[in-house]
Image 1 (cartoon, rainbow, N blue to C red):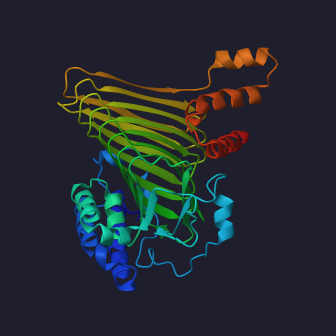
Image 2 (image 1 turned 180 degrees about the vertical axis):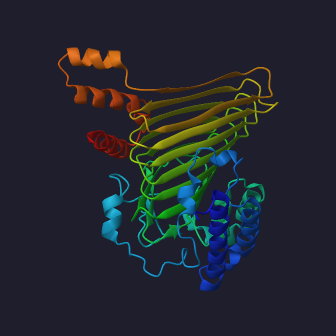
Image 3 (image 1 turned 90 degrees about the horizontal axis):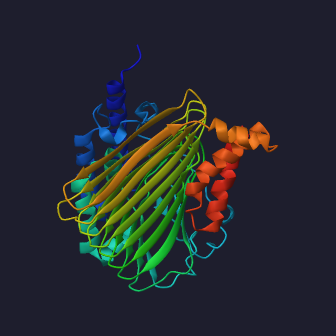
Amino acid sequence: MALTLAEKSEKAKAGLLAGHEEFKKSGNAREIFNDVNTASLERFNSLGLYHKADELFTYVSVNKIFDLDFGGDFFLPTAVTAVTKADVEGETFKGCESSVIVFVNGRFDRKLSDLSALTGVVIAELENAAEEDESAISDYLSKTVSTETDRYAALNGAFLSGGVSIDISSGTTVEDTIQVLHFNTGVVSMPRTHIKLRPGASASIVERFVGENAKSFCNFVTDITLDNGSTLNLSSIQGSGYLLGKYRLTLAGQSTFNGVVAQPGGVLSRNNYEAHLEGEGAELNLSGVAVIENEDEAHNYIHVHHEAANTRSDQTFRNILKDASRASVDTTVDVHEAAQLTVSHQLVNNLMLSDKTRIGGKPILMIKADDVKCQHGATVGRIDDDQLFYLKTRGVSEVEAKKLLISSFANAIIEKIKFTPLREAVELLLLSKLEG
């Protein structure tokens, strides 16, 4: 008899707990993270893996995750493919050759990284950063554990054994784009990144995730703290296997976060954005584009807290779905009482190219202040017949006309990627999806 979803959840949870026992025995655990590992495991245990009323996973096919063979050796693969310098060079964007941070199976690899172009930036193993600034790192980790609502982020903390700290000095403008390159050559990886921009600093970071096979399971957490007047541009390209991520953002006064995520396919890609605009004048701009086919999935769960006056947030997502793929954008903007003069926009557009696709979304506004400008909206549609007819009357074939219309739909987001090599890579992936 087939297991129910609840039974699969309990089986997967038991496998994860067994895996944690092996993790503690293996020597991979670090003493400095013992308290975080224990507290995170307790948090994960209390949250569990699945609940039918869990809003963070309303549209996600958790069945896919539970069908993975979680067990004692899931986190301790016996054979791991080595990553070489040539592998790194092949996945490094032009212009990032001397500013690339490499993770291999969730661990920062300094030997494969090249940081020679970076000045005013301190890159350190998270464990070393904790030793040098124990109170700050420990406080940050303890706080995130105690308030964590995402069960997979809690799981990341339970297996935390390393990571990287990126600390950008006050007033520093980092000229070179920093690339964070994640390789997953085993079964699972649990990367953790802590990014801090000091007052008046600015930087651009691009993320790339490379999985060796369809069963690679990357469960990452990225914490971002922007001090007064700082600016971070973060662009990500995600795909292959299972990719679950949590971005936790804290914005001080007059700071700006510009984020763009591209999801060009993978068994399951899911991002959870938790943003706190704590200082007056803070601004958050978040955009995403997904182009998926077959039975792949792309999901984004977003919760933005406007906690101070004169803050601004803008969210724009576009999804293009083929075959039996599935996507969702579940976004909530929470305007606190003190956040007068808040301006917020949410817009999600979906383009369906098949009757079998599934779209989910809930743009929500929770407003406790009385002087705000907030808008939200969502659309689901198909290729416009009038536009298609117009192009055909101008001598464009139907196939090429459809490609042109779909590309135009996606380019509204893609053009927000300011780093040219990444933008071109996303455009190429888009075109490859449209060939089928």
